Length: 171
Image (tube, rainbow, N blue to C red):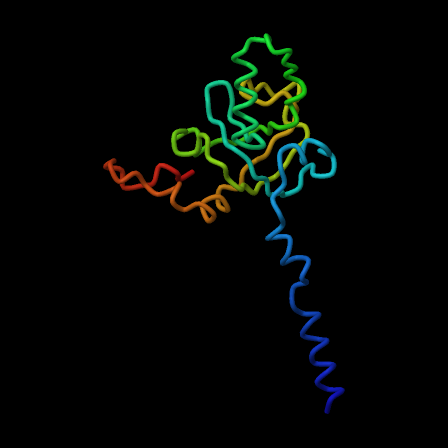
């Protein structure tokens, strides 16, 4: 009887999804600098990244942190008087390739630190792609908005002050 139970347990364990597959859904979030540090490792893969969203006329990006973005802006405002080397900051920036719903209501997302899931690409900026708001490196993330809505439902609630019956976030 014990042999039958052992065999049944082995069959059931083999039939269930592996722990590795389940764990991939809950991987630790990477930073933009981790992705930019080895872009070929993550190219065309679904990743989770955590960073500060910036949605301004000059760019729709994810920065490593609010502090790093503030420090970068402080150096830019100094106009080079502090021996600022902007290329040293490139690794902290990741372009949002599909800002979509974020662009419709930038005040909701701008300066928010979020964990975002999406497809990372190491070749977003190509001779055929022009994005004046992109980070200097050719890397980007295509956001999975279904996942983002699940993570942050409050950011996607319809603005109660409008008369729209549909959510402005519908794609």
